[in-house]
Every structure is written in C-alpha cells, then in structure tokens.
Image (tube, rainbow, N blue to C red; front, side):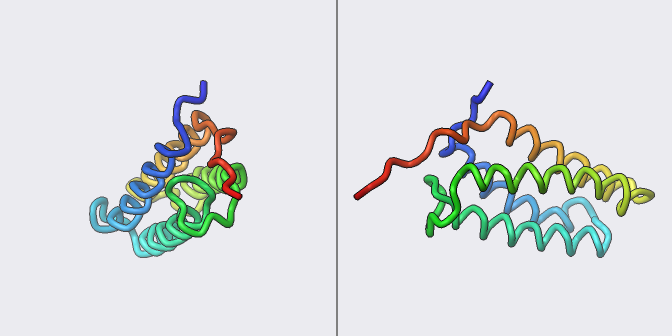
Length: 119
C-alpha cells in the first residue's frame, strides 16, 4: 500500500537530513560512522533539492530515480551495519535501523505521482 505522497516524502527527506547531521552527537557514533552520517546527510540534501517533487528546488532528478537511489542506499546501509560496523553495537544498530527505515519509506511511497508539467 502506497500511503506516503511525494509531498510528504519530501518532508521526510528533509527530516532525514537533519537526523543524519545530528546523529553523531546524539548517539555517540564512532569516527567512521560519524563521517559516513555527515556525508549521507549532505548527499541526501543534494538529492532532495535536485528531485522533481514539491521539496525539490532544481528538479533535475525524477522522483522514480530518487526512489531507486534510496532503495540502493538502504540496502547498502543494512549490509554495512552487519559488516563494517559489526562489533560496535551503537554504529551497527544505527545503520541497520537507518537502512530499514529508508527501505520502509521507499516501499510505502507513491513514486508514480509527480508534479504537473508546466509549459
């Protein structure tokens, strides 16, 4: 069931950016996990402002591509949680939960709705 509209997805994306930027201090992530969190925050911000939906500014990236990128990132984060961050419970749980959260949001977002074309 696709219950998240593109407009609400944009709000969630900006909230995710904020979460990624405050998580190192909030959760006490390791240096490696913190660096990745900051990098992901910047990349997510750039992806969001470049997407063709209500939260986008430049509207270069299609909403479907945006979703595909988030799907790939969510899977990579889950893999990283149990490989690279294995042994550090905080980092492992943070990235496993983050990847799962992004995957769930991907699954329930309606990527078929898009902005009307203005000629």
